[in-house]
Structures are given as structure tokens and as C-alpha cells.
Image (cartoon, rainbow, N blue to C red; front, side, top):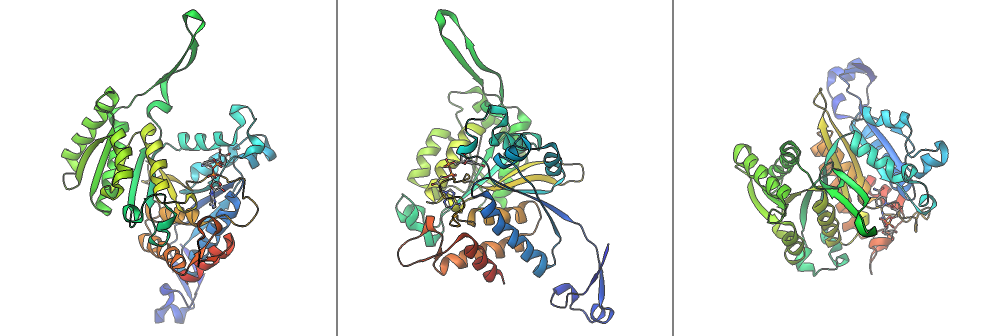
Length: 392
Ligand code: NAD
């Protein structure tokens, strides 16, 4: 519990009793948010997220405790490693990690273990972030930014759930080995177990219940045993626990084709690591701009029932525009909206943040990457300020 002076503008202080006492005793659970801005445009876009978090703290009496640390190339420059043990342990203790982006040409020639991306892989692996959620939403105001016809993408709202810690990217044996005749053989192994499949499928079904109640599960069950197991396990889970959700199975190559032909047929797509990597990139391009799309990586719950999670924009560090103040912060801000919804159980706050972004786009404000004729070009920080004034 904490004793606080009354903030007369806040809802919790509106009663006569608190007014007459002048202070308030509130049950406080500090929600720890670790900001890892990273490299390139990362610090520029995460600065806007920080403003938004501070707004929620000030105006909505929320109790987010913010910490900020180096990760990626900037950590290598200062400490000789892309992530220090201290930062890694802070990440383990944080309920929410907000990442900007890591990497850039400065660090391209480092040995593999020192590369900025190693920090991300370590976090994803050690925090057991097994489900990657990538919404592909086509804002009606930006329909022309897509390479597809407006009628195909207008109103698009798909959620791709990609398994993130299993499958061919992690399976053993792996490697490159010499074989006879002086040739070499590259080996990767695609494996999935029942529990790896069902835990990610469960996330997809739960999400579908909050959306349009439809899941499409994608694999290659026609040519891969692991794909056959995937299909069977998803089907069994559906019959046992999620009969109310509409489930269909689709071969991953057909899904790639259907995403271009008629993307609005999908609600939630759940698929493995390899196919999810490709299908989510493909789906993101339906919407036209990298600068707009958020993502969440969700992990297993700890013994207190708290889930570890990392939220980040899908774009990279964009070295070509870093330091110019023109990066689009919307993907990062919408990533924070996902954190409000999926980690912090603050659906109402997530709704008003997403609405504020829509309102700013309705007003014709655009960063350079989404600029079009008749709109008003704005900087990274002015975009953040405009979103805050809509929240206000
Ligand atoms: P990128 O996403 O950084 O940039 C691709 C293009 O999109 C660039 O022209 C860039 O200017 C533009 N762009 C990206 N985000 C933008 C934004 N918010 N606002 C406006 N324009 C934006 O991809 P890349 O150029 O292939 O990679 C650059 C670096 O980022 C590489 O070192 C790569 O390894 C790294 N990367 C990191 C992550 C991550 O940290 N999760 C993801 C992808 C790439």
C-alpha cells in the first residue's frame, strides 16, 4: 500500500471522503516496463512510447515503473557485448519489455556471438517467448499505400500467430558437414512436440474468441510428418476445448496464395516458426508500411501467473533514416497498445490509444514514409505529441 497526496483531477480522488482527508491509501502493484530502445531509429521511436507511458501514469494514475537499458550495437560499443548480464536479469524481472530495434552496418562484421541480433535471440530463447503475434491491419486512411487493390485490403484485420521457439530454426541435429566426393551437406531438423503445438494453438484460439472467432491452422501435412502432427494436435485441442471457435486447416503454400487473393477471409492464422516467418512478412506488406505494424512475443506464465512478454515494432533499425527525426513511431506506439491489452489487462486503455492513433491519421498527419498528396508531413516527435493530444 502507498499513501499518496490526492490528485484532484483523477477519478479515484473524486469522493468527498478522499477530498476531505486530502490523501489516499491505494493498493499499488508496480508494473515494471523495461525499455530497450536499441540502435538506429530505435531510440527515436521508443522516446515517443516513453511519453505515452508517462501520460498514462500522470493522467490515468497508472503505476508503470519505467527502466531503460542498452541492448544491441550500442551495448556492444559500451560493454563489448550485445546484452550484459545485468540487463538480461532486469529483462527476466520485467513484466513488459518494449524493444526498439537492433543492428546496423556499423556492427555487420562482428563475429557471430557479438552481433546485435544475438541479444534478441537470447531474450526470446531465455524468456521462452514461444508465441509471436503479428497483426496485419490496413488502416482505411492508408489503403493506397498497399501494393494490392484497395477493395482487397481495405478493412483488413488479420492476426498471425507464429510459433517462435521450435521447429526447423532450433531442431537438432543441425550443421554443415563434409560428405564423400568432396561435397558438403547442410542439415536442419524440423521437429515439434504435442505441447509445443498445443500451447501456441491455445493462444490462437483464445485470441480468436476476442475477435471474429475464426482460426486457420497452416502446415504442410501433405509432405511433412511434423506438419501432420501439427494438424492432428490442433484438431484434437479444438475438439476438446474450443468447439465454439471456427477452425479450418490450410496448407501453408495455399495460405501464401490466399493472402494475396482474398486476405479478408482470415481472422487468426496459427502456424509454425518457418511458415510463420514468411507468412507474417507477406501479410505485413498487404498493409503498405513497415512503420505501422506492431508485434508481441508472449512467453509461458511464471508461478504467480504472470506472463513474460516482449513488444516491438516489426521494422528494423532503419539506419538510412536514423537521427533525422522522420521515423514513424506508430508501430512502436501500437506495440505498447498490445502490451496494455495482452500483458497488463488494460483493454480500455489499449482501445483509447489505438483510437488516438486512428484519429491522428484521420486528421491527415503523416510521417514521411506514409506521406501522400494533400496530407500534412510531420516529424517523429510531433506525431507522438499529436497522439498524446488525442488521448487528452
Ligand atoms: P528496416 O526495417 O530497418 O528498414 C527497411 C526500410 O523501411 C528502410 O528504408 C527504412 O528507412 C524503412 N523503415 C523502417 N522502419 C521505419 C519507420 N519506423 N519509419 C519510417 N521508415 C521506416 O530493415 P533493414 O534495412 O533490412 O534492416 C536495417 C537493420 O535493422 C539491419 O541491421 C537489420 O539486421 C536490423 N533489423 C532489426 C530488427 C529487430 O531489431 N527486430 C528487425 C529487422 C531488421
